[in-house]
Length: 252
Ligand code: OAD
Image (cartoon, rainbow, N blue to C red; front, side, top):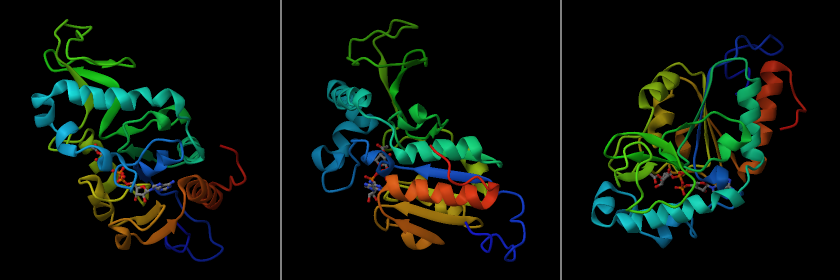
């Protein structure tokens, strides 16, 4: 977001910093070795959504669904946050206005970089009990026979939002979008709603897309930068902090 975009004249102070909402998708974790969904080698090229990522799939074949998420959970320890995750954590630490990072990602790389993301599609490292409603942090494999640590029922499911279910935190996200002056979308193809519609909900704000290539909704953004997240995200964060706080040249 440039000072011109916020209405200041050249040379004048940029005014109060805008409230920021950042939305991330699988592209931000691609360079950490985690597959995206819709790229040519993506997850949805290997398995069908209807077999592993719907409530109906879980009702039909819970063991299959558990195996899919167990395999993805098992990949996490070997994956490390990359320069894009670190740059977004730095922005959250140093930004003088309100800041909300919303991620569609169920990995924990933002969290391990030091961010406090709202995981709108849930988290691989959490499970929830369909019998008692308790949520638990979870690093092991989940089986159909695994008892809930709270109530002992064998009714645990991944704490993941499946197709046909309501994403998490929508009230908080809606309020943040209403009040933001800058919306930035990072590494998402713009195919899955409601996240794909956030750019339109934030149409009153300056909107920026940072993605490897133009997304499905690229033309809806006022500013776009295309390239690998580990390059475009740190460069964007650096420019934003330099412009609004004078803090350039920082490390992650
Ligand atoms: P997609 O796989 O649909 O899109 C990933 C985007 O990241 C694409 O636009 C790629 O061009 C871009 N990309 C790939 N590598 C990149 C890199 N190194 N740097 C920057 N961008 C890169 O993934 P999402 O948009 O996150 O939901 O998918 C949204 C949701 O669909 C997921 O949360 C998941 C999936 O089905 C559920 O499972 C409910």
